[in-house]
Length: 331
Image (cartoon, rainbow, N blue to C red; front, side, top):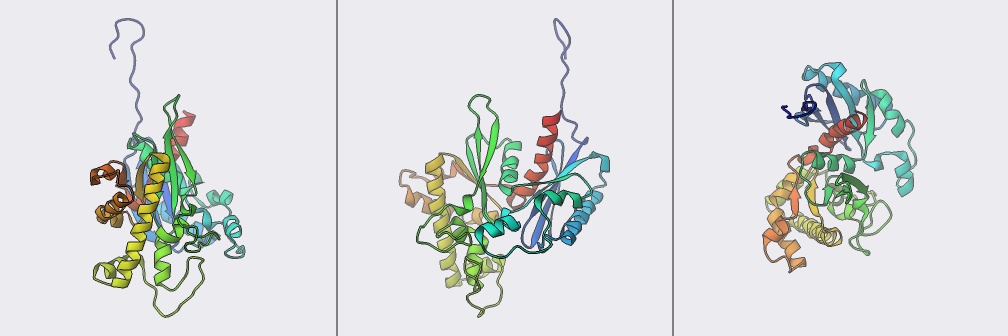
C-alpha cells in the first residue's frame, strides 16, 4: 500500500488453498464429515451410515472413509492440516463407568490412541466445542450465545466475549444433564428429569420403541421406529405420536426460557433435527411466550432464538475449523 512516510505497509491474508482441514462428527449409527479450506469455505459435507463400535477396526474403517473423501476432491496430501473428530463423551469407557450403565467393554480404543489410526494428524474435540467454533468462525456471534446440539445425545456450549480483549471464547458444559423436572423421567446418568431424557431424539424415540430412558428394554411389542418415520406418522395424524411431540416441544420451550433468563444470551439450535425445529419454530415460540408474557410478540423471541444453517453438520464443520484455530495460534 502507499504510505507518505516510512516503510510501505503490505496487506497479508490467508491463502485459502494453502491448507485444508477435515472434521468428523461420530454418532451412534452415522458419521458426518466436512472438509473446509483455510478461508473457511466448506468444500464437502457428507454423511455415511457406520455403526459406532469404537474398536480398532472401526477407527481404521473411518480413517479409510476420510481418505476417500480427501481423494474425491483431489486435494494435495501435503496441504491437509489435520483432522478433528467430534465424539460424545458417553462413547468412552470412563463415561460408561461414571454413569454405571454397563461394564467396560474390551477392545475399545482410548481417546489418546484414536489419532494413531488416521493417515493425517488427528485429535478428538468435544462436540459442543466444535459446534461453538462454527458459530464464531462465521461471525455470527454478536452477543453471548448458548449453542444446543440436539441429537441422540445433547451437547452444548456457552460462547462469550472476554471483557478486556474482546476475544470470543467457548466454554462447554453438560447441558443435556441439566434437570428440568426433579421428579421427572429417569435419565441414564442416574438423575431424574434431565433435558437428555426429554429433548434428545433417543429420549423420545426410545419410549416409542419400548426402551426407557435408563436404556432398559421395557416392551417388545413394537418394531423399531426411527426419528424420521416418527415425524412422518405424527404429521400424518397419529395422535399418540403428536402427544409425545407436544411434550417434547413443551420441555424444550421450558428449558430455553430458563436458559435465556439465566444467561441473557442468544440461543442457537443445531443438530440432526434442526430442520424439524425450524419447521415447528412458530409453535415453539408460542410456548416460550406463554411461559414469559413479557415477550409479547413472536419477534421478541425470534430476536434471540435461532437455528443453525449447518444443521447436522455444525459439529463436523466446527471440528475442521478448530484445526485451523490450532494452526493459526502457531503462526
